[in-house]
Amino acid sequence: MGTILYDFLNDSFLFNNNHIADNFSKFTEQELRAELSNYRGFCLNNLTQLNKEILPVGQAPSVFSGKSHDLAKLKITALYIEKHVIDDPLFELSHEMDGVRDTISQSLGFSPNSVNKAKISEVMQYLKALTPMVAADYVKLLPISRIYEPPKELGIRYTENYFSDLLPPQVMDFLHKKQVVRSLRKAEEGWEVLDDAQPSRGIIIDFDGNPEDEGTHIFHLQEVEPLSTGDDGKMRVKITLPETQPDTAYFNAWVLQSRNSAAHDFYQKTLAEMAISSQLNSMFYTDSTIKFDLLNFLGAQHQSIQEYTAQSMLNIDLPFLNNVNAETLMRLRLDEGESFQAFRDALERGFRSLRTENDADKLRQKTEDLVHELTEAQIREIDRKIKSLQRTALAEASTAVIGLAGAVHTGGWSLLAAATAAFQGYKTFEQYRRDVKLNPGYFLWKVKRQ
Image (tube, rainbow, N blue to C red; front, side, top):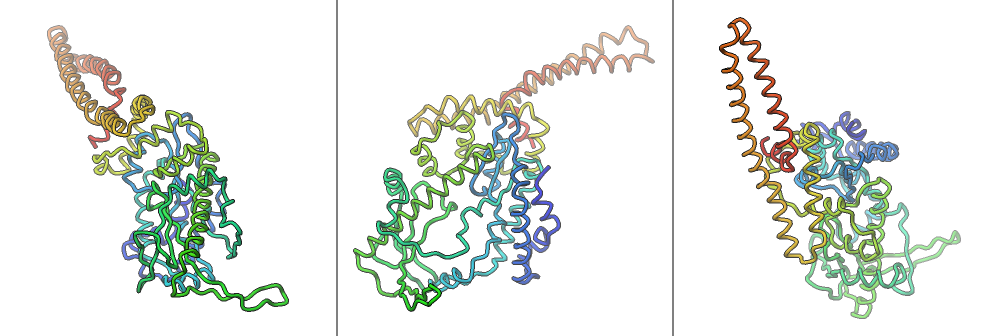
């Protein structure tokens, strides 16, 4: 089935291997902007259809991520998850910064808004690599980044209490404890991140336990000077970034206001992702421990075994998957559906016994033991069984031939012997299917043998 997004891309020059390889050097910025705009329009006009593509498959686990994942991580989760919904990285590149924001950004020392051809090429290579996973209906793309885009109109917010009322006090306090605040110092190009918070005209706020690719919060302390007010009610103002540093009290008050704004933004983003996950009938999948902790703090329902297993797959490292291409992995998921489900069941049984473990060191050790059992011990056991079955099949076939040799004339011997051998082989296959194919490690055994 795949996705209608790839129907668009297959007809677009963006998906051309030669253009990707030379970073779209033959195209002007205007041509690339126009094609990205076409793609953006296609996505937004077909949101309903894109959501319909993500349908639950029986009881098989389906998950939603608020971002895209690298191929290695998607291969690991493919060992358990039926469908993985990720952010469409090309849609994110289609967002154009408006003129006012671009002007303000340049005034802060950042480069003007332009088309990053190398970044487009990188994203297209990623989407190319995802093709087998998309075609197999494992990976689904959604323009999730649209919910994080700033409003079209640039507003000025006012507060009398440093935005402390944006969240309930206990939630605000919880997120404050997770924040890391550092100052920014103007450099020749851009801004330099300092080790601590000290009076300055810029700060960066991160949340402990949030991965770098989840984004960060940057604030600049500008000065707004009213110039005039017209009869139409519009006010002209002058916005500047003074070179002088603010005094400590003013800086601390601004930092508090910024921390409250960052906490509210993080809270809203997390709940928005949860809402999308619920709408898609999928589990919410994140490698951000702060998001996980926040949801628990807010009283999210206790994880099911499926959810715990899916989340635990983030912490599993299977280096051998680096040598397995995505197309092969997707084919084995389809061809070996019975053994794939047996492996899933084994994962759930294993992680079911682990989710009550509160000691981090013990949990890590038990997880390593479980992974070793399924990826090493079980596979060695399958190797032994298959060699044993092969010897049994040869022995049974030889006995059948010897028993028939003296009783059948040469003309009919080969046909009857072949039929008898086939019968013996069928019995062996049944034993093979029962004793080996349903072994929890058989699916990974097949993957490794590829």
